Image (tube, rainbow, N blue to C red; front, side, top):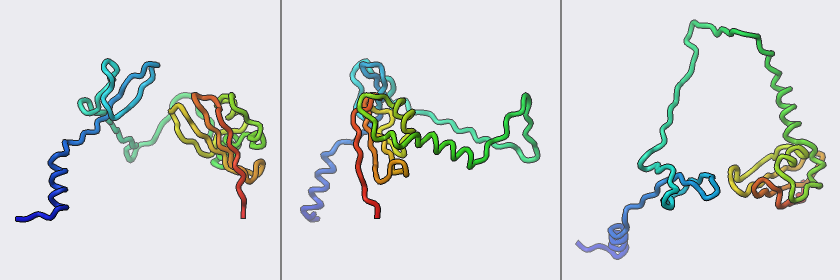
Amino acid sequence: MKLGPHIAFTLLVTALAGPVQAGLYKCARNDGSVTYQEEACPPGTELRDFEKDPASVSVVPFRIPPGTTETRSGPREKPPKAASERKSRRDAERRGNAAERKFLVPGIGEGEVVARVGRPDMSTGAGRKTVRWTYLPVPEDPGTITTLTFELGRLVEVERKVIRTP
């Protein structure tokens, strides 16, 4: 049986390639934080090898059996607020004072930014050293997308991009 050159090459590469193993390791860093990585941890820093000790997940469904009623003991809670009232408060907290966006300067912390201009519309890099927050145009700051870059919780860059609206 004669094999074509492409098939022979594929078989050769497959035979020479060793088994591919991509493990997941939980390692301690020098600063005391934890990192998850595909390579084995340096000696003495391994906290968990998920290949040898896989994570366990427990899911317990909850439902009230039919024919029973929910009873509450203790003081009665306040009635829930209307959805529109909750949404308007959440929107006000998220927006803050959009006019303040143009006065943000590097060096201030994430908390001060939230207090001044509210929560971002989008964010990337949560839990990492560098985080980017993006604020979209609003009537108080029309036609401008503001992107803030934080490193270790401190604002290091403010980018304001003017966009044209049709």
